[in-house]
Length: 113
Image (tube, rainbow, N blue to C red; front, side, top):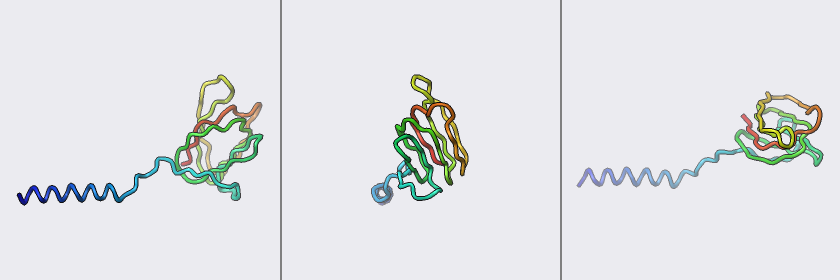
């Protein structure tokens, strides 16, 4: 009986910890105002979108013509032009890129390292 109570106490304690600790988010990327040069900045005809913090986020950003990585190593998954297969590219910190030719059709995923 003593062994049963000990096991029960361990199970209850483990369950309590699981209830008390919040589930961690797989994506910690935040959309922020474009007030600092350290943010990932994505430019298109509609203006600029800025992101901060590490994580992965699915997005739908069309017509991208410039990217500034700021203080972030970034992997972008994108469709270069309508009908083309998706591809990805990793860009190092403090890199500014201008898309040559026509703008990127759609960025579908952002990963900030």
